[in-house]
Length: 127
Ligand SMILES: [Zn+2]
Image (cartoon, rainbow, N blue to C red; front, side):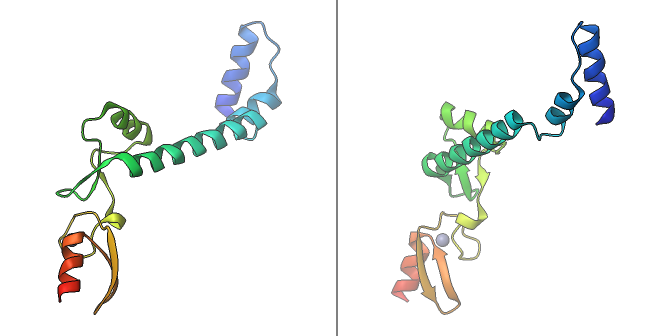
């Protein structure tokens, strides 16, 4: 990082500006107030985008994850989040072995509490 700091300071000098080592250092190491504020905003925006994707993306029963369904707004959102399409979501899958449908119900079973898809939920309830 020292090398980067020196390169930036040299570039400022070549541009005829007065280099400010403290400012460059705070930008590089992320402790400048503007950098901290921007990082917090980016984090908040990504969390909100992620929540929107979980809420509006469709579910792939074959892959066990959220997918864009070809909607461009969701494709852009997935790209920004660095998600593949479909985006694997094992914690949202039915807990019945081998089932990749989305868990939409929860119920106590002989093996403890499980989150299940509607079909497996019915199996448990019907015995
Ligand atoms: Zn299931």
